[in-house]
Image (cartoon, rainbow, N blue to C red; front, side):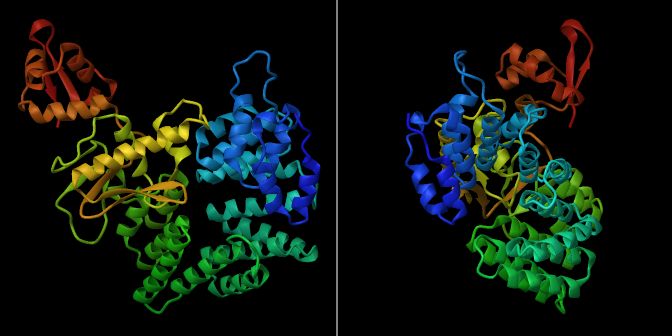
Length: 490
């Protein structure tokens, strides 16, 4: 096994030769990488946005079952967790980082913050960033990065005064130390703060400074400035129609570059401009993050419809056919998925977020909770499930699709409505089977034998449905012994 020039690659990256380094490490035979260099190579690959390489390199170490191998180090575990987070396997990533709570690793709290931010857990992310910040040398680049990220969490949580105070501190430091990009990033966040506070002139001034500082920079920095300048322009428009037209143009631009969170932000701005709860309802049901939903409640109050279900229409016209996600079938029976099956689970997880496509890693982790991710097989298992659901959609003859966008997958529909509920997970298949029994049985108490005759199910299966914990409130047991009858609630 050859000795890899890790330090040389790090220096070349600092000199702006990241592309060459990325090519060099991409060509490596990972099976020949010495264990002593695995963690450092993974850290380098992380910086170069090569998560799948990190997973292939570290999975045999992290998930090894050979007693002869040394356990994974905190560095190896942390980098493996971050690679999982990058491909969407957030639950396993969180679990690994939580297991390292007492480990001595300088980036642990920063990585914890990033994983929480992926899931919109900004309160937890802020706590992690404050812990990380206490471990950094005052005035160091790492400390400034931590402060910028902490300020961003305050903005997302709408803690405007705290965000403003911290950002003004960062602005002064980055200007003095000629950190041009961070100086621009801080002003972009300040623009968001002033938007939150309704101080539009100050927002425009901050975003103008950000625009100049980030001009010509790589990444999405300039787009974010353009985005908030456009939202500011829409908020200041003379009429609702003008404001909505401005936001529509931004949405189209976001679709062109596949920046889906901008579309969510545009719809949020539309709800603020119009004060229409129907727009807030769509955001509420189409965003599976508790902290985001809490923000909607603060601004729009609690709508009664948020406690039940939502009809997701593809357009403004009403639809005769309805796809009920919880039941896995359409009202015209063109599509009927087996209750609780993998395909039913896939339909459920893909309809929880109306905006952001799902990476294959996230799809795998939702379909097979509790299973460790395997870089050699998990992507393929998730993709094959997508192919099978696509075939079901095509066979239904309805306007149902799963489209691919940058390696992630998004549910789309047209010509029908989709009924979604505020459930964290799909109901047990016994709950769905009880609903099917209810449709077949007369509206009166029935004996077990009658249920078996009508449904064609075995005695053990009928008892499993009737006695399932999820069905406790829906089944009333009357009498005892051979004369026992069951009344199914509506």
